[in-house]
Length: 100
Image (cartoon, rainbow, N blue to C red; front, side, top):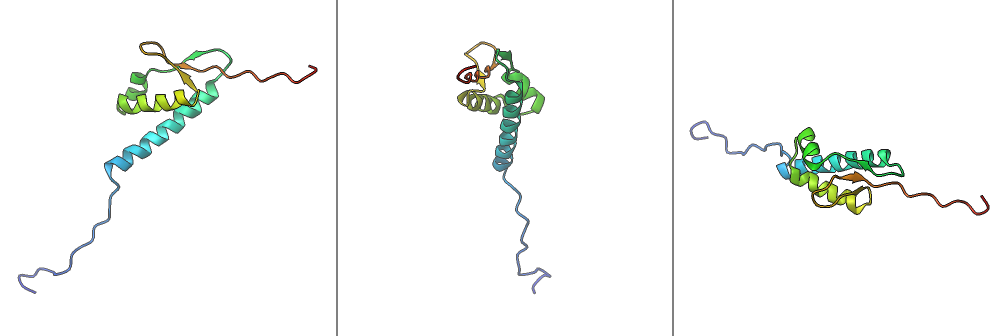
């Protein structure tokens, strides 16, 4: 060996990319907010936290929270329109059984 250097390369443990960490965090946040919305559903509309409140609380970007809210709106758990309060969608009434 010249100069005391090894000719072999050291292998480093591969760290997860920042993107995969963010994606896992967003999936966990989606699951958490989905569970909160489902547990909080009643027959009446209820106020839900704003995108800004959720982003600040969990220290994530408002863009990530907006995407999660869109997903939950698509699932029928949240309802909102531009510039208005986000609401938990009311639970659907169960049809009454015949003869009752």
